[in-house]
Length: 371
Image (cartoon, rainbow, N blue to C red; front, top):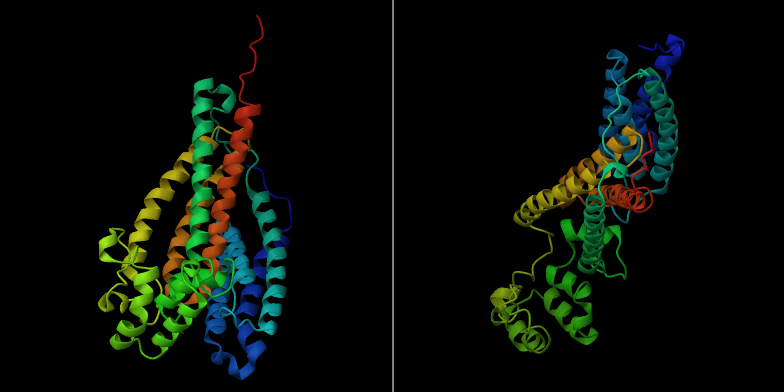
């Protein structure tokens, strides 16, 4: 095994620096807010937990010196430090600046630490080898190329559906993190009916009707007001889809008992819906990740890079779905949902485009030399 020739004190410098960064992160709420740190519970607990985890990872690395994983875990915590927001719409500039500075220092420490880790990996470490697209038959390459195109189009359709169902939930045009948070956490200052009419169904009602519905909701959403004012609007514009006779399995707004279910304070997706979506996504996205990852194994790239790009979608998928429940509890985690989804999409894009490029341009087998 090749030994690292760096002095012992330099080997521990990155881990000690990581320990210091964690300690500063833990103390950050008191530094910014002084004795009033607890008045901002989201920032307080976020910094405290992240800092303790950083110190725990660095302390583990100082004790277990041959471990490789703490460097990557510390990098993930630093990225979280850079991405973790204040409560949506209430970010404080001083805390944001402090996190950006600390995150920049953490990135530098992470790079130094990972370089030390890579320097300890033996140069003769076994490399995973296997077939490449050059060894695949034309039939295999055609099959792999077609499945990549179809799955890529399917993912684009999924993003389009996400945009169409969440866009405008906050009352502003376009899709924002606030819209994603409302999807899971809800709009606690309004109702589900109002959120749907301002978002996905904004093109199916007039502003005058919207004002009448909002006034009814704010007045307590009573049955008499529904029969007198709201039901004619529903009968005219919504009953084609939102009625028991439509057969579309949509909420029935054509009766007071049906519409009253969505005339309550919007608390986002129910736990039952989240569990249902979770098992569907885990099965579906897991199979897609397996197919794309399997095809990507034939790419002519360094083994460590292929392994990394194949593992990332599975990790991002689990983090994404787990933070649905956290966002249901606190909208601050909506940023993590967005970041995890972006990482998943980026890794899949790398797998699809690299594989397609090599299938088309590098997939032909090399001619055999005459002997």
